[in-house]
Length: 185
Image (cartoon, rainbow, N blue to C red; front, side, top):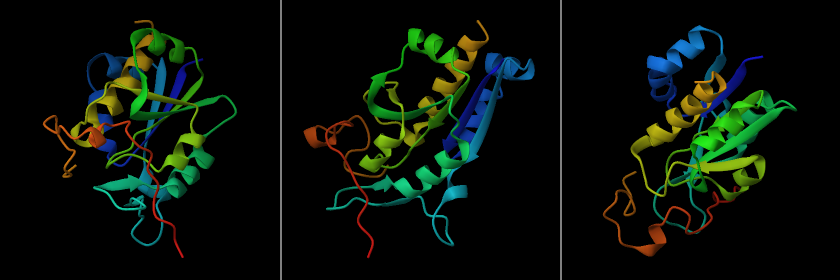
């Protein structure tokens, strides 16, 4: 039975592009794994399909809201699913973990953007994985490397003050604090 992977992202082409090339493309063509990429805005809130909000209590950047994530997971999660949040504060993703995850039947990767996720989202996932404690533009690498590496194993084979590597402010560490969206009236 091939590994099934669902990827929730705000930028599907950033995932589809790398997975449509080289070894991941051959794995998908041979039916050794299936990857479905979903635009998280499909479960967004309101007319504009909003998926983010300002942090409660202030701070730089936007935070992914829990409501769209909960709706997306309600639609995609199965009893055999492992839901994975890609987050710099997570456990570092290494090759042995790719082999372990490749044994699963269904993985759901949640790929946030902005300044992170509302802390309530962490309770919705089974694991949190990181490719390192640094900030990437749009999170392109974790979005494509984690599903790509895992599918390969299955086949056997921001504009804030904290953006960029030049920030010395300790509060800018990716795992320094939890975040929540502001409450609605």
